[in-house]
Length: 330
Image (cartoon, rainbow, N blue to C red; front, side):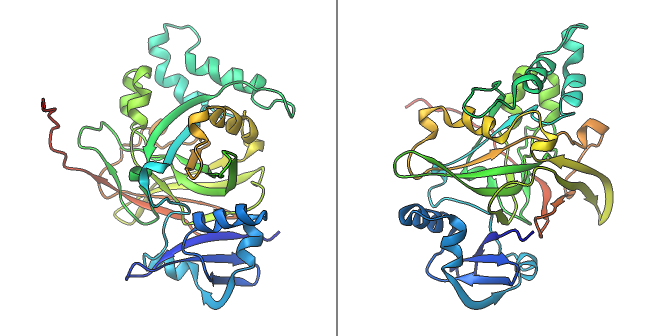
């Protein structure tokens, strides 16, 4: 099966173009400078994103792997106004995802069922409702706006006050809100939903704090239906050697919630349906190096790969040198 993939490309002089990769190879598109621009055109024309892209295929061939190595591929989506791009997600959505979280919070529960396990089991029972019915509400979190979006090969920078900088290999849904407020799903991208698990472990009520970190998005936007059983690998390299590596599973066959249910609970809020906005929604994971005792350090490289994505998502870990913030009276 051929999977169409879109990539955003930027030359050294700032000129932007879009690449379409399909069975016949990869070529630059003509007449559009970004995936968001192409999607707006498709909405206006009443056609699919794939059709709009194929209608604009030019003569110039592209080598996505070479462009990635040269640092010329951007995140699969972005927005010219960073404040109009939302990074958010849902947790405890994957079969097996509750085990690490439950262990993290069990000490505070004094032998009782943790809130994490309760919400996970609610998802197992009601996270895949029949069409037209409301399903179980998932855990939801906010990560930031477009200022927190990091592209492939770029550093994921942990704040100086952070207790940890850990990877979360995930699939992200990419959405654009149409002129009438309709959310349009453009496709899917590989993502690293970078989080501070030490802060979260200290107190579950600090989950919101632990999620306010950067997040990385892969270079490829996968068009069409999401593979139901997507299998990949998450690894950490230190000084060029593999420090930790483990398979991860995603797609609805490996999840306790349907993607439709996660989308319904996100976009039910009118504030999330503002025309022109872009949403990157992280669908969750069950695989974390932190759960196996790994302590990351500056210079470690996170690497996530999963077919049918042809390119990996790689990001080195950095730590910011933050000056203390002092609020001034005016």
